[in-house]
Image (cartoon, rainbow, N blue to C red):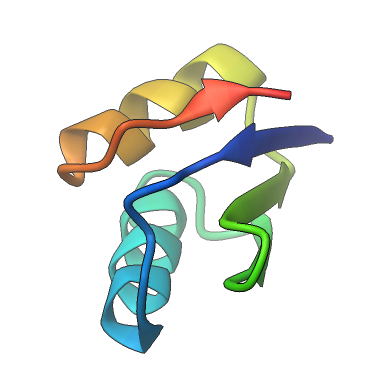
Length: 64
């Protein structure tokens, strides 16, 4: 499990974009988000790969 701070995740569209990007690479992955804390937690995908996928979706994640 990997958790990231994504300060530029500000709305439901952002949550959906990040979730869909991760699940496109790893359909079995579980993605949990906390919009108020700007956090994304990913299970079922290597942390470095998840970080890269979130970046490629246009966001600026950092590992927590």
